[in-house]
Length: 96
Length: 163
Image (cartoon, rainbow over all chains, first blue to last red; front, side, top):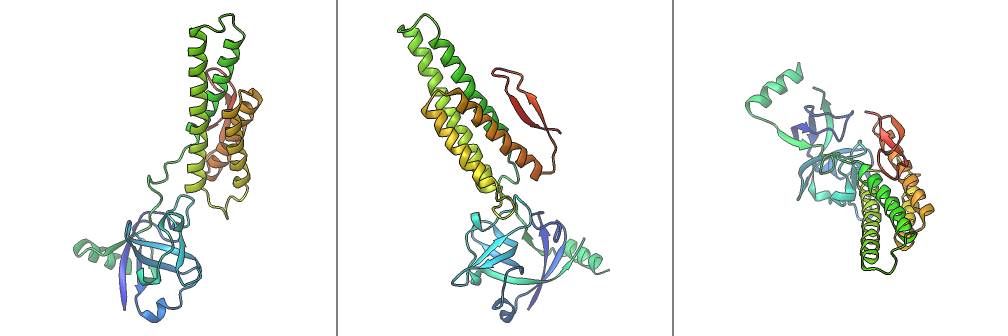
């Protein structure tokens, strides 16, 4: 239902910085209502477990994601994120 | 308090990590390669003009030198275009830097013109446009820039990060 994860990297700064902890909700009902602005944790075949912000929801439900930094890895390189790859939605952050 | 507990737990058990990745290589972008390549284009144009104004036309030496200048001009015009495309495509965000698109388009056009012709004016415009791109790039990094003449021919005014 809930998981705690630790952030590595700074592509989501200043909202989330390296060393922060986040609590994610993995309950399906949370994940069915994802919208622009939500911060999600998802699995990517090439890059592993990532945390990014939903920029928009594309037709068909795929998620277009981005970081907050100019050089953040985003959907231009990651591609659209299928909803079934989403591990959870961030519901609480604990700054270091 | 919660933070301390989580850190202690993390030390003992280790939480799963979620990566807030930057691009790979992580944030290593620099327009200087494109600037130098554009300068090289103008340098080759100057060498071509000097050779053309010389007396040893139609000799093997002439053709050999001219071929080499043209080849290097071609290579560096394309190199500059490539470098700009990488920074534009992988670094800049359309919503945050909407004006860069027009500038990049202009650089692509000028780069092609430099390949197609030996027009020095086009070469100078190519250098100027890439300098403009460099200034915008460093501004996004919060780094001031300065203008100075390159310390080698063709000694054009260039934009450098003021580090």
